[in-house]
Image (cartoon, rainbow, N blue to C red; front, side, top):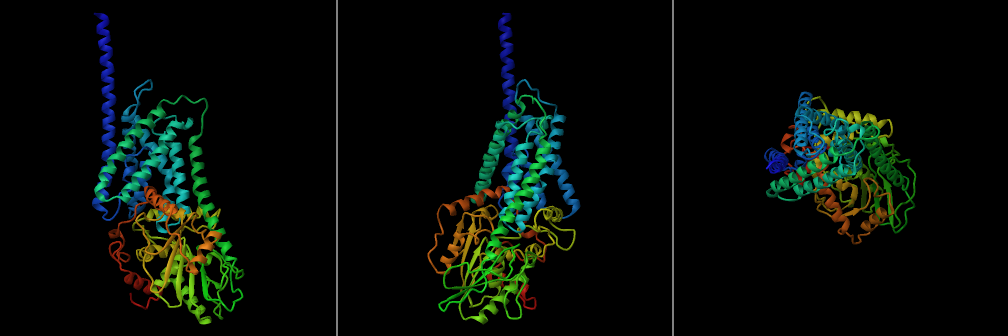
Length: 578
């Protein structure tokens, strides 16, 4: 009888133990699903026309949740008081949710769960640590929404992922900084990154009717990821020696953000410099049939000399960011000359086309890259000229100005992000000539003239055959819904490096000779897939209704191409009314 009673008591304890685990698991599942549904519903209700692409991260394992929160805050704050209040709210709410998720996911076993106060305290502390380490990545991603170039994204997101791989344990164990990262825990972080990317891609690709289902499914995965991650950290053996994980995390962020962006920028500058040394006034053959005006990108420089880059019956000239001399010839320029407002550069380009046309009766093709592509497109859209028959845009800046920051005062959406961009630009200046300062005339003009510039890329130009050469890397910063209404060719390259390669030159020559192009294939599919997946890690766009009234010209997409052309014409020639 005694043995039977002891056995019954033992099995009752096992049964109660199992019930406790199942109950906590169900609560964790409800929490994760509920958070995702809540964020998706709020976006759908208050940000019309936007996709809740970040919603699957609302309940994700640390620190992906705070990464999503910070990106929302970077866009949606309109004063210093607001950003301070929002950040305090993020620390408290996200820290509490992290602590609650860990409590619900804590495995039964030899390691007792810490008390609620200790768990929530660790959750808030870990959220604060992650927020500090993620600020540089968030600032770079905000910058990509101002001027979408992929090398900023490719520096920001790997840095954020490495921070996640290093500090995900901070909320689980007080001695996390002494422990190495286990493969199982790192695997859950990496798997979460992949699944969150897929979930966001589905949010962006599917109609709103599917959003609740995606929120639920991603919430279910997040709950399972919390269970796996917490168990992997809790059951880890005690370390034999201390590992300075916190210091490593800081070094990783500095190396990825500064090193990655500098390498990308310098790579694009090298390609631009290679292209810039290659042309000016070659011998004109009697059979020359077309003038080609090359427009390099931001940060390029030209010394006035060079060779003919395109074999064939073309006469080539370089657009000068400095202007023309008295004889109508382009002047050498430095990289500093490229930092001018878009409207000023538009006017300069139109003047050089007029001067080029005065020297020849041949048709003109404009081949432009990055900033140059934006300048060429907006100038020709504002003032079409029969002289230009072809426009080739390599690494075009698609949909710039998706966020806003105050350029003239210290109030308005993105005021703290404005200052963060300035500080990050100062840090870059010590290692490379990268000017991310919001005071940069080029960036300021993108901020002040959108959504006109955002809509301009998709507009036709009367009498001009347009073709875009899209580097695959730029899919990371291109809106998933972007669909250019003219031929596009995806090139396996990085931003700003297309024209400096043999493949790029071959494509340009084929376009100018009116040869058929391969506009489909696996690269095009990869471009679209990457574009959708990257929405998970971009900052949310500012809703059109939230733009300040001088810039709020109507809902997104409401401007016709005729209105866009009128607005651009008025910006170039202020005396003209749009």
